[in-house]
Image (cartoon, rainbow, N blue to C red; front, side, top):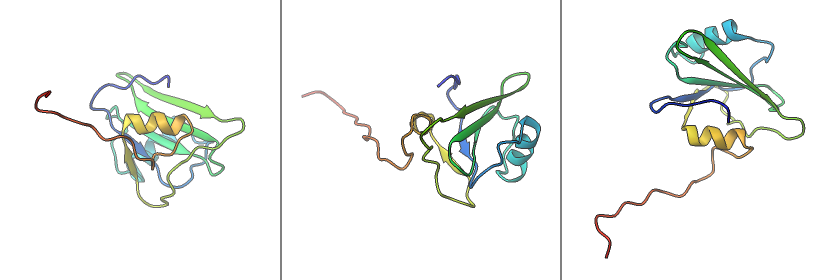
Length: 117
């Protein structure tokens, strides 16, 4: 993944399909309206098309918007099925999604120990 993600950055996925002809300004309007988030927050906002072969990620980077775009030639993204709810995922789950995995899979849980032996 080519996006550098600072700690504290959240990842929001837009529900349903998005028309990939939309560019920065229109996607920023969707973030404010449909996702009810601030597009200038520095968080990542993901959009996917109906065929699930294209993803765009919009984010604000200090002095301007960035738009990251990925189109798959053969496979499909495992985009969450929700048609109405904005989905908040971790940066780890975003990497899974962009690598062709589902965000629904269960990762190994974290272990914590108080002492060894």
